[in-house]
Length: 270
Image 1 (cartoon, rainbow, N blue to C red):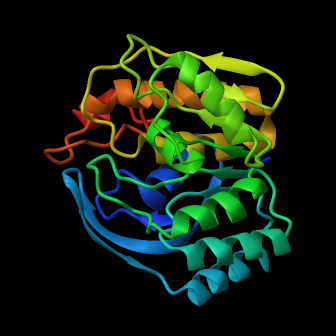
Image 2 (image 1 turned 120 degrees about the vertical axis):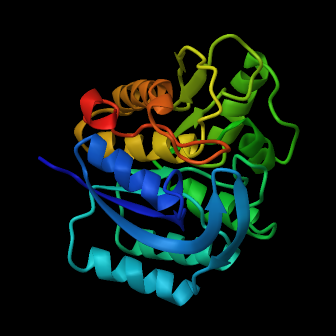
Image 3 (image 1 turned 135 degrees about the horizontal axis):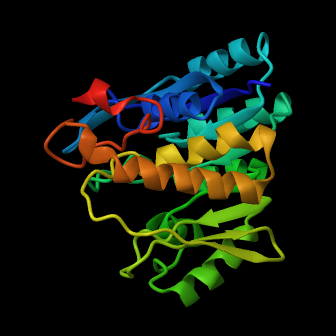
């Protein structure tokens, strides 16, 4: 079975994040990728210059067109940009009984630029989070969702992952990449048990689109595996994509990860 995975997110013209990263991750992991665009951004590896949200009614039309014709096996939600767009996405996904929803609460780009309007945080938290099979916040995003400080230790993460679960998702994957430790440990929680997902920390500035890539990798894998296995495989895929990122030469800032590290032959990249 080749699952059909839908990304609902913003567009990154430099190709490292947003729907471009999602479609690459879907393809690399054997899923057929589709995309509904919520916002157009002007960005590159050095930062976001500006963004233009898509009209919410047109976001709804895009979603309607997909679900009217295609069996959607998983949905990844990334940049929603505004409260109105978050609301219309929630309405449509609830209407169509969408399955395997992976919510990456995109708020700030790697460069520090905000990608979510301030009034949209409540809509994302109250309308989209409860629909999710899993949410995948990083530590700054967890602080915003919980209205408190950013978790600064593994103990803080253990408390935060439980508080995030109270917001209504079935699972929480809290990413620990922002911690100042030798490894990069994420926590996966289903309301009962916490599973640690460790990985080696790779010293590189090529981290553009890592959150997009991880969440879309989970969405590609979920229709064919359980949550713990999907999260483990997605994290392993992302770790190797970061490790191979130096094979690419894209931009002078935070470069993209190598989504096709396991597919492209090295002699093709020389």
